[in-house]
Image (tube, rainbow, N blue to C red; front, side, top):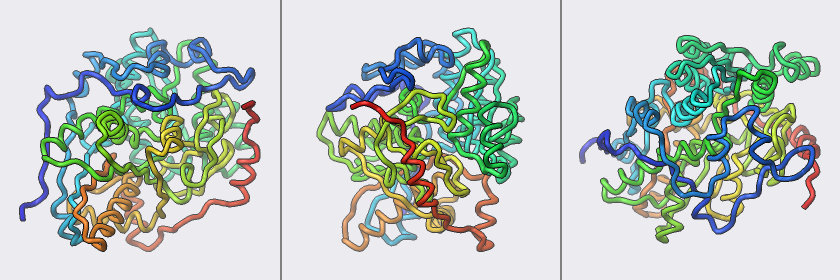
Length: 454
């Protein structure tokens, strides 16, 4: 049997339009609400922190949104991204399953995040903005926006979740190499950060806290806009290039997945790979199971409540309906910093409520066991976030082995782990722990969900 096979599309096959799943859904998603009035928000409510082009993409119901040519030109630096048939891995697992993975670690910052960082920087530059503020967990989004900001001449300030800031110094260095400023969150720079530190001086931070700091900076400075790396509809839209390419590559392979798997923290990577497959399945009745792999220590889809909630800890954002653990919930420290968010993208949450996607929570040590086995078979060191998709893909492949089924598995490898090697060092030293969230803290956070009229 031959080794693993790469399916690579020619440069001219970079998608010309992003895919918007809203056009194919049987029911529209619930609208975001103004936290003061409880009424659906309008463009004016978002114009202080986003350019109008992104606001329009946030609410559009069009199936296709044209990708600007300057964005496509930059995409050519790494797109189309490769899809692999993991034959070595299949042999290692002794499974009859056919395993494919879509690899996004070929981008300059090493993950899927530039797929949206580049268009966000482009639209802000076109709107006359010169500064962007943002948050980051593991640092992949922060480094991607720093990369994109440099390409379009924008100053970028990144509030990085403190536990990741401490665990991942090379991610900080990468942001600084691209010209960005990186600050540990919670910080003394913002009112939001000061309030958290006053209450919890040793707070490890969270994405919700970092979002509050970045939004506050954008709201208070007319020359600064906010950029978000996940959760919102326009971000998921931009990431659809992953799945659009993967569909064509699966057709090149003469195969179709029985199951599509991707890790999910805020939801952009998961949506990017899976939504084009879900849409094709809805339009053409091509059945496919779609599984979101999330951390057991921060299980928004499997343990959270589907309700309106704030997207940040400081309650500066609109209310969105999503699977949430509560905006004040702070998950325990674990190495997949990009998955430490209290909520899930409203669109991903809506699809789960419609029964179009499912979710599975997996634990940290089991994820790294799978990641090491994958690396030894396929040669790529996965990012800690990506290990969750690998773990679920392993479980699906072993189920196929036990049941004697030759199904096709496709998973997303959202980025490489070259800047996350401390996680692997801890794993090999036996220092990695499966940390559980505080059940009492979760109940308290859910009890604080904002009241919203039916």
